[in-house]
Length: 327
Image (cartoon, rainbow, N blue to C red; front, side):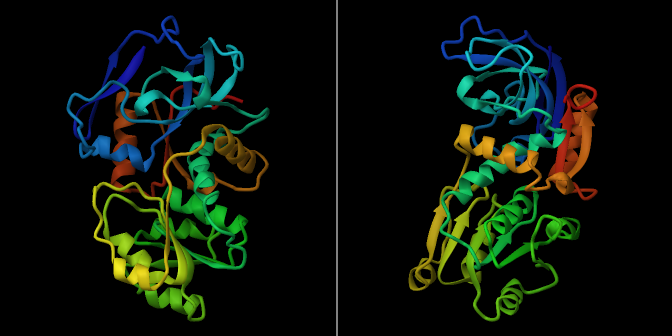
């Protein structure tokens, strides 16, 4: 079967490898033939060559983990060949025509789903994060970072009843989607002072909740603390690259700030609820699906280039492995 491999930073090549088999799988598992996948921000450090302990050529299939497809083989009582599923490939190795997923990391798709159901994977991580939050009904929220995850967080916080959802970013094309993804205000931090804008929007209250949805550097965490009111909550959602962050502890202490971290989902309940949100029309994810490329060497290379460089208004970049979304 075809599989992609990073041979150097920003360089993919396609090769052939043996098809996966469940012969020696101890846990109940399935072989999934991939139909659609999406690039996530956590995939980019592999592509850029900055991921910890990464060597080249990298492991086959790195790096994709947001996948939907069809079960071809199963040792699970829950799944049979032909079932349509959302499944997590092991160790982000989803840049392959097929992969093995364990039963506990595989979720059935609802009847009559649309191709947008692929977004249940990233939305599921947002569901997991929101389950950790206090009641935010009628409160003021700020989402720092309006990439794919920040935009999904906008919609989730709006559904949870936040009074204000303020999206902040540097990229105009992403800010243009903020209100379509249910933000009440959008702030361009390259042209406006975020602190002054949040103070004005909240009538001087500042934010009850600030979500850091950028990651991969430390400056935005410092900005989040400045935007919070006394007794506010900081949700660290963006992926950290540094082991130690220079946090303004005295300010956090004096303002009685609560710090919450969130990474990953609880697969079965969180992905299932995210599917309900999308399938039932409670969250419209279509605005963030901006590009679609084929699972070819050129297609994968172009998709990752576009996503990593944030060109052409790229937000969520899809890779299709088969012609036509299944239904």
